[in-house]
Image 1 (cartoon, rainbow, N blue to C red):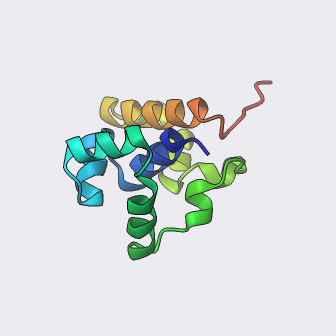
Image 2: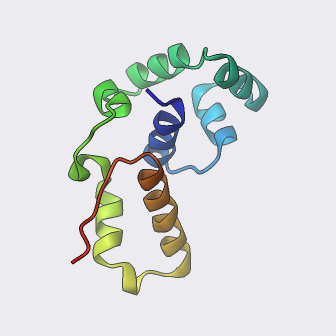
Length: 111
């Protein structure tokens, strides 16, 4: 399991882009968040947050999701309407797409 992929999924889920934002969501200081990430003690905090927020742990930690599970409804709507998006929404979509691609959660056939 790659903690960075889990954190990226959390960022997408909560609509944030930075680790310090996740730290706040998890009730940690940015420094505590960073330290826990480095030494590998962030998982219990993530589990507690996910359970309290009713986040599906399987979807958060599963490594081989299908494309339709990996893309949020908002991202799917953005993809369908990309050409009519304003610049802010285009950047948000591109960040989500890069995150998903980096985690190797989706593949696309270009044809």
